[in-house]
Length: 448
Image 1 (cartoon, rainbow, N blue to C red):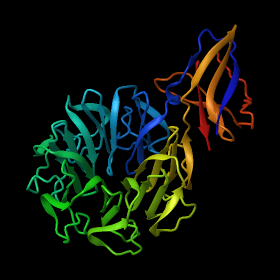
Image 2 (image 1 turned 45 degrees about the vertical axis):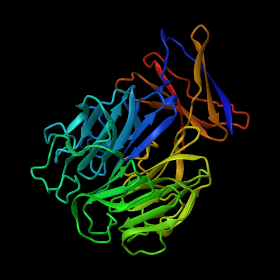
Image 3 (image 1 turned 180 degrees about the horizontal axis):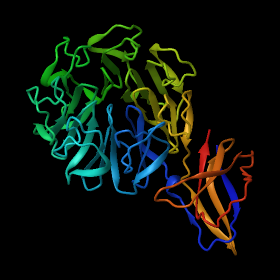
Image 4 (image 1 turned 90 degrees about the vertical axis):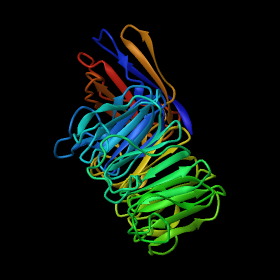
């Protein structure tokens, strides 16, 4: 139950207070890479957390030892972002509301599409307009333009670009694959899926585990028809998921950890039905799978060595098991971690956290969903007179919140002031009175 919590902060010796309310925006989209995560908030801002060894977070740095990144989300772009994609490798992309494509991170195979193989730690413009969707594999990229055309760049040793060749040198600029009628794209480690306007699914690339679903284990370098009546596609590391118009879930490919959810650990080289109805969203991780049902419940199956299924164990499962009973609206699966959003805009995560990819401020793995960012969709500050100020926000009864201060926002150094649970009446008591002689920025966030 949401309750209104009021914090009274006495500010002394400060000429100006600036409240950092950017973190108060609800999360609207999430994308999980190999060891990092991208977040899109309601104000169009892009945030990133986790491994940054190749600059994939786009914050202008390359992560250094021992953690090589950050364990709490940091803002990368302030506004106008509309779509995000984190790769199974170490590259990232996002779209702005003008249809422009931006990229950062690893580029050893030309997957960023900037005409070079140079890694970059800051967002760079790749295409100025007309891009509507992006998908990143291990070292290849798929783009969808507003005219329904499909474009690709990067590694092509298995034919994953679909241009009818095993191109080398690999194209480091977007290369047109299909001229029209493509509506959705998905990229696995070395394979690609696309959905056409007639609801047909096509696939290309590596097929050693049957992930293309064509009944063989042969790689193919051009799109081939796989299935019909499909409304959504998802590509895991070496497996694929399809959602059909009747709400049924289908899977094919690598299944050694039960990621297909068919009750076996046998590879499948053709689509097989996993759930007969009621499925509304799908996500493929490295070796695990997530899906949502029409009642808002979250389900998972497959590899669980880091707790990425979120069932409270580290045991693999080859059957879908329910993780959350309802209220889930979006899902993302990384290599060994998982994230989901609830209807109130709050972000939850579980699994591997060795690079801080969960964004909870620690490097501790968890096998249960934990709330990372609360939905502070109402936050305000009011001067009470003199140097006193009151912050009001909407929180969750029984949750923990922390008041933090920073000396600046361009390179924030958030320092926790205190952490206390909310009482049944929503009152929060913070100790450690703030010293504002040098620190003028404040935020309130939830913590485990």
